[in-house]
Image: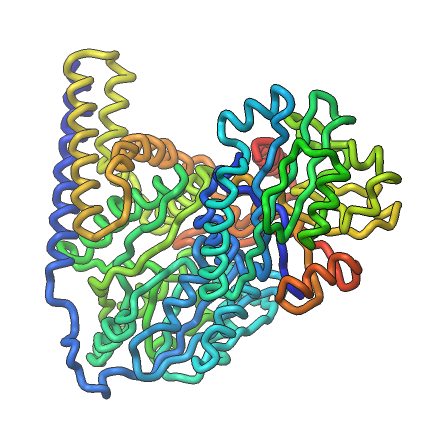
Length: 230
Length: 402
C-alpha cells in the first residue's frame, strides 16, 4: 500500500514550511506519494484580494516558478526517497458565508487555472488537463478560525459528476456524510505546519506512478484511509 | 546583603566550573585518542549495529541511511521494532530497499520482558545479530562514513570493554530543539568531558555504545538492564566493575533534534534529572551550583534589581552565551549564531526543572508511567490507590495543555 498525502501547502501560499523542507519532512517520514497543492485564491472579493496582496495565493505570474520548483523537487524526492511528488493547486473560492465557499484540489495540473472562473469552467478546464478534482473539507470542520466550505456539498447534485473524489477526512476531522453518500473518497492532512504531518492520510493499493494513482482514486478501488500518528 | 555574596560566590564558582568544562571539551577534542586511519584491516572486527526504532525521530531516513554508507569492511544493521504499524517500520523498509546490497534486517517482535522499552526492543535484535562485536545506536544518531572505522580499533585493547562517543546536537528549527541542542552541546558535553578528563569518571551516553558480546554477557547481558532507566550508565558501571575500561571516543556523533516542541524538551530533562537524582544522590545538588545564570537570577529575585545583582546576572549570561558559542563553533554544531542568545533562557528553564525530581519520583516514558528507585531501577507505577489522584490530575492537565 502506498502511503499518500494529497493536500499539502508550502510557503508558496499560506503554509509555514518551505517546499524543500516539506519534501524532506515527508520523505524522511517514509511517504510514497504526495501532492503539493498551494492555494489559488479568487481575486473577485476583498478576502481574495487581501490573500493575493499578502502573497497567500499563487497567481498567474508566479505559477510558472512554482511549477518549475515543484518539478525540480519532485526529481530530487524520487532520487533521494523514492517518493513521487505531484504538482497541484487548491482552488480557493472563499466568501464571507460558508454556503458560498468552496475549496477543491486540482492534482496533476499543467496550466494555470484562475479561481475566479465559474465552477463549470474550472472543472471543464481541469478535465481537459486530466487533473484529479478533489473536494476539500466539504462539510463542517472543527476548526474555529476557518469558514466552512459547504458550497460543493450543498450543490452536490449539480457538481458531483465533475468531482473525482471527496475528502472523507481532513487533518483531524472525519466527514461521515461522504461515506453515507458512498462517494469516492481520500484523506489528506491540509498540511500548513509541521504538526499537521500527524493527521489523516490515504493508502492506495496501486503502482507508484501518476496514471495508476489517478485511476485508483477515480475508481476508488484499493483506497483506504489511516490516521498517521507517531 | 551578606547573603548576596553567598549567591555571588556560588555563581562565580559555577562560571569557573563552566570554563573548566569548556577547557575539558577543548582538550578532549585535541587529544590523540583516535586510531591511525591506516590501521590494518584486522583492527576492524565485523560489527552488528542494533538500531532500536520507535516512532519517527527527526531525520530518521537520513540517520538510518548514514549507517548504510559506512566505509567499513564488514557490518550488518538490525533495525528492531515492537510493532509493524510503527511509522518507523516504513522508513526502515525504504532504506532497506534503497540499499539492497547491504545486510539490513528489520525485526518486528513484541517483547515485554522488562520495563525499559528501549531494552525490550533490543532483545530481538541482539538475538538476531551475527557478529561478536555489536554497537547499540539510537535512531536519532547520524554519523559520517568514517564512524565505524574511527571507533572500532579502540576495542583492539582487551582492557577496553566499552567504547562510547561524545555527542553533538544538530538541527534545531523549533524552540524546543534549539534548547535541546544548546543543552547537549554545553551542559551534557561539558560535563562528560570534565568527568572523563579530570576525574577519570567516564559517563556513558547510550547514543552509541560499542562492545564485545562476551564482555556484555559477562555482566549479565540485556537481562541485567531490562528494568533500569539509565541502562547506558548501568552497563558502563558494570564494565568498570569487571576492571575493564570505558573509553569515550572523541569522535562526535550527531544527535539530530530538529522539530522538538518545548514540552518534549522539558519532559526529557525532567526524566534525566530524576534519573541523575536517583543515581547521583547528593551529587545532584551540585548541578544547580554549576548553573550560574539561574543562581544569579535568584539573587535578583531575592534582593531586587540592584546594581550588584544585575551585574552578576549580566556577567553570568555573557559568560554562558560566549562559552556556548565557543563550544558550538569548536564542535562544529550547525546552530545559527543568534540561537546562542537563547542560552540563558534555556538555563533558567533547566534551573526550574532541577527542582522537579524532589517532588515526584515517577516518569512517563514512551507512554508508560514508572516509579524510579535507587540507581534508576524502574518499577511499575500503579495508577490506583490513595495517592493515584495526583497522577490522574497531572495527566488531565497535560491532556488539556496538549
